[in-house]
Image (cartoon, rainbow, N blue to C red; front, top):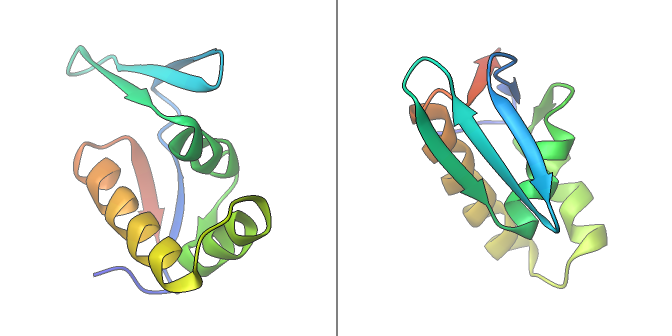
Length: 92
C-alpha cells in the first residue's frame, strides 16, 4: 500500500529513451525492456526528482482530464507495478 510519506524516484541505472510521446526503457540487470504510454511517461518525467503519490496526482490533475479518485488509484497501481519491477526507488 502506498502512502503519502513514501517518496519515489527513478532507478538511475535504467536506460531510457523518448520515442514520440512514449518512453522505452531497459533494465540493464534483468535485460528486460519496458514501454511507457504518454501518461506513464509523464509520471516518469516527474520522477526525475523524488515525489510522493499526492504530489504526482496533483500535477497530473492539472494536465489531464481525470477525476481525483481515478487518478490516485491508477497512479498508485502504476507506482506499485514499477516498484516491483525495480524501475523506481522509494524512501520514507
